[in-house]
Amino acid sequence: MRIDWARRASMAAIVVGLLLTASSTVPALSSVTLPFLSSLAGAGSTGPGGGAAVATPAIALATVAANLSDPVFVTESPDATGRLFIVEKTGRILIEAKGTVRSTPFFDIHTSVTQGSEQGLLGLAFSPSFTTNRKLYVNYTNLKGNSVVSEYRTSSTNPNVVDKSTGRVILTVAQPYSNHNGGNLAFGKDGYLYIGFGDGGSGGDPGNRAQSLTTLLGKMLRIDVSGTTATTNYKIPPSNPFVGKAGLDEIWEYGLRNPWRYSFDRSTGDLWIGDVGQNTYEEVDHGTTKSNGPGRGLNWGWHVMEGLHCYDPATGCNTTGKALPLTDYAHSGGRCAVTGGYVYRGSAIPSLVGTYVFGDYCSGEIMALDIASARPAAITVLKSTGFPISSFGQDKAGELYVCDLGGVVYKIVAA
Image 1 (spheres, rainbow, N blue to C red):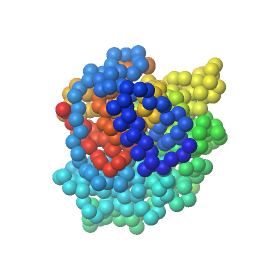
Image 2 (image 1 turned 180 degrees about the horizontal axis):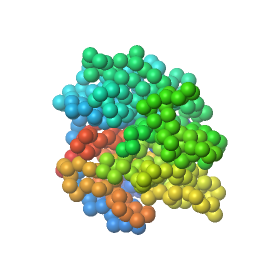
Image 3 (image 1 turned 120 degrees about the horizontal axis):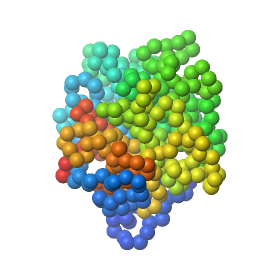
Image 4 (image 1 turned 90 degrees about the vertical axis):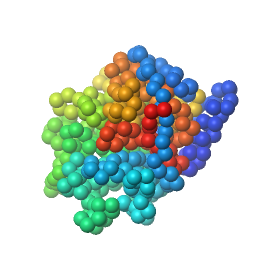
């Protein structure tokens, strides 16, 4: 079954309401195909895992901005202005500064994006050299339904708006279906741009794209946007795993279903991915940083595996060469889609430092796990929010934010 974002938000609210008010078991939403679609427990409870659960710090949510249109990301620019940039799936980026959202959008391409259930303006990343080159990168679904990564610069005379005449398409990837577009963008500590794409959509990866090394779908890509070649508007980092061998040079990792949100630990450079599952399990992937980069060449297993479990075939699958997630969790009690987050490196909540904070879109839970845990890591529920969690964000101080798709961005603070 396919549903749009508005209906999904309504469904999530209904599910959460039932969970909070009824003692009966809520059926898992196993028949729903969603972009970031996994068991609900009360705050402070844990999921399955091999390590100690995170001590449960008391957290609260402070409203940063409201009356937004489908917010799907929030971040702070690398400069010293303290501005927060809020990405609206409907095609705009807004600036929040000193408690006020500017009425003039920072960026607006709402007439150029497809706004289907899993489509739209989906990702934003500022160049590590933004203070000098004024460059930023966006990931969106164009009117043909294909994924586009483009580069822009802010105006040379007004830092609060993008000069759209500077737009330059970096990469376009054809999408066979309207779901599983991925959409995130993030620069690693190595200075390269990482681009996550889903497996192309439908259900069950019918084209086996995630395991194929001849397509960019179902992959984590790593490219160098500091230059161009004769055929591309980017360069290939020479240490990418498939350079000089079978496989597309852009591929960094593969075997992903829909890496909707991922991030880098600002302390270690490790790559953390919330990879949305099919009908049964959600997973958190951890690519550790080594001399050649975080998680180089890993195969996360989809569609042979879903989380730590066999998917196709359902039993006896070949796990050789597959990287296992740090943890997974089941679609029960209202969970249905992991929303990847960040390793907390802020100072406002000391007991949260060194934990990976993430959530579930449908249950509305903010969860955490100890990054030093053995597999499978235990999951702790920090807070049940009651809203569909579309994304998390991080500012320069390492403090975290959470987006309610219904139109609000909150900052996570100590209770």
